[in-house]
Image (cartoon, rainbow, N blue to C red; front, side):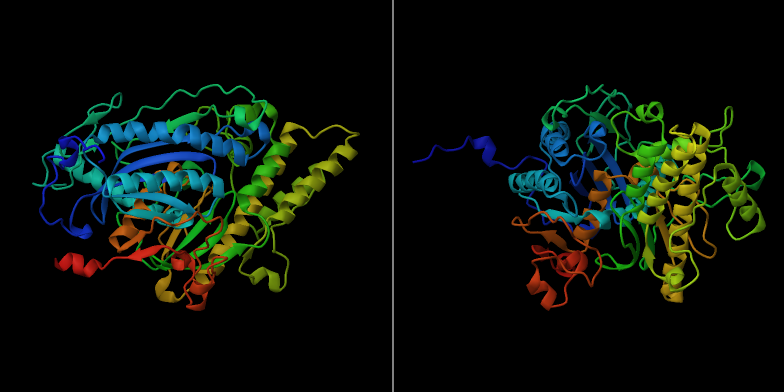
Length: 534
């Protein structure tokens, strides 16, 4: 006869009663989220009393040190996930005490299968141990929903601030949010848990001799105790010419358009609903971030790259190098952008050609059918840079080009690349119906220009990189819509958001015309209307 468990372990914690729970739309939901799709190990604890407000209780990310390999090394990233995920989770779970989240959200794809498996298997274990649902999130869907997350965070912050000032009786009531008492320590209360992590000092990572040795990482953490700006606008114009954009107060409503730019994707996505999307524009070769990273490794001096630590975000180093801040000025970039097609731009291009002897053009910009194709192409622009460097080295008698020319060439590449991005974004808007043209732009772009007659929303950059906060929010939206994931779910290396793209091996779902976000197996649909009625 097996031994009996101690009696206290058979009892429910005192905070839980046998009362019938409220439906997901009308009660405080807490979600623990895990993100391990690439080289970032990230966890988040998010609470949301309504579909329009949310509070980030804990958020921490550890990035694997891949700089020595010149890019993301799959084995190094896997070792980093295995090393750091459990300690990060232990710290958050310890603060939860006897409480447990309502469900666990985790990135299921797309991404590196081994990296995804670590996060997905851990999430499955937590879901089984706690007896709560699992929600497997599409990584690109989470990026798409990030503007809605930031608006929800801002809304909750405004409610807390009003409550602290005594304005509006009951502001934020029922949210269960507790403002952090100090940014130096973690706090816990009976009603809800507020975890505030302080940023860790970057740990110097010695150059590893093998991928296994590269497990030393730096960690960063964020807290949303203060109001987050929705728009972080940098303008190349002078101070008296700066175009001020009003801060949006409402989350983008379906349908809307999203520009997704990263090292692996460059897409314009038309989102009809939470689970229905159409990729209007996609790259036919490499992503914008991939091209910029390759150019950065050739153009940015080694001493500038060293200032970015172990990060492999070479595009950011290229941006810092090509668009330096003016000394003593608050303006981030000491550069004036000239629109293409005019005399000023023609004179600028001519001056560069006379000084350096190179001429570059934007991808797919030559007169003809290619000008209107809904496609991105960046490999040709990167190859042009390589050819310029080889030719100039030969012309200079084997000497590499100077820093001034490196900066000018890098600046030209970035300007042409982002003009290509903007041109296809406009074509994507034109491809949509008149009543569907609501713009949401997510991109790491140095010069953001507002599109006329459209609302442009660019979240803070820390929420545009890979992070578990966006996974938590996407999981919340899916869970509130009645979706959860079965425990037999497997990681997906490729998982397009496009309704007309089917996952390899999912022939049965393709036969029924189920693709995109819902094209993966193991989706479970709850009856949300019945939950609300009960």
